[in-house]
Length: 257
Length: 334
View 1 (tube, rainbow over the protein chains, first blue to last red):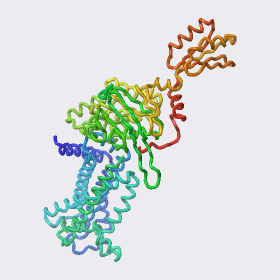
View 2 (view 1 turned 180 degrees about the horizontal axis):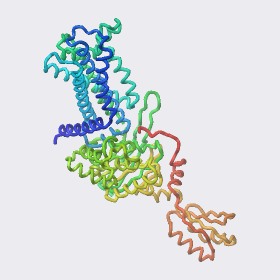
View 3 (view 1 turned 120 degrees about the horizontal axis):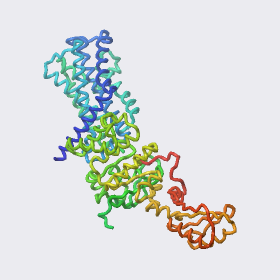
């Protein structure tokens, strides 16, 4: 077999391993499936009535769903960072690197498993959404495009998380740090409320930060509302993040010891 | 002996860690040399922070040396790292075991990562589970294993590919005495099957029990090397002790054994009536000789015994401090 084929085989073995761990730890399942479901229901029924969303076909539930998907994809990456931090700390990564495997497989196996995990989560949210009134209004093609964009966005943040997990190498530190950047970025965005309701200084941030662009793009794809600059700005942000964090992640990975 | 007989060769290996800003660089290894014959066990003995783990990490391709060279089965660990990885196994203080997978799944995964076909990987996993007395626990998740079982599973995991050279970094640290003895049995069986072993330990009895040759490392240098007996010889060798109940005969006893002494004249404790003679590595022959001589001189002795210096004596003599330090000097780069 060629080295590329072996790299693919190693990646697949580690992907399966990561997914098995995920499936066997109840807490991980809760985080990736139960939590987004609760968020959907909470915003749909508790906060939703108080949030003005004119101009969206089915009202707030249509506005909400792409937001929850964007936020969930972002939060799911915390699992990436935590899992890698634990493995680096326990020395598992070292032991894998003493074996004649493709060195990249530790990272690609992680990304692949987390990508699959994220896809399951997104589908669960869409399912829950459909049960509480959400509908795609823009055709099947755009619906699929939305899921692809959500996935691409999530994987981009996973790469950022590879770096964070390997750089911090402590579960608690990763968790604390995740709160610091993910909470403001996802909540101070257009995920749950229209940014027009925010005070001017906050709105300036919310309108221009990448997660708002991504969520707006998801929304346009799902609902057929005007796309504007959101899609290409999302892609630029994502490519920029990859260009910065991919090399950084590889660098810290090489140094892990 | 030619280099083809050597499984591990280390030449003037140095590793300096440039610590973060301002603090002085740490010289973990200050130029060590090692040579391990194929099929033998080298015990690398030293206290915490001596540089043992750093040496193992370089030999297993996890760390680049600052200078010097190291070869495993004739392969350069820096230039031919990928090749070296196919030949070695490592069991370190950190674990390779995934708690959420069963014992069998863990081993199967290792086999798959060694590019075995699934059926081969599974067969090898079953074989190892039996060999390491884990067959009954094979389908339980590793999370439910005891410390000793985990350590055995971990060792099994590093043997999946039948490595030529195995590195065991403190394989019994933290184990209870019973698990420790069980681990020793497993290691002996491995050696019997022809695996070359480099074992680091801070336990003197462990090196004594398992190693053919011992390298004593302290502060990044090999301060002594040789067989356990040779090292013990360094501290003056074996000691013969006996008491003479009849004090009148004490002087005659001393004269009788005087010419046997190797490493200082016999020491006579008049009050206790005891004579001690250092006899080098003559060992039990010296014991027979002593009996013969005392008999010829008409001396009646009691409590005749041969005392061998322990590796504790060796370490103390070589380094000026005891081997098993209780202070928490952190192992560099662990």
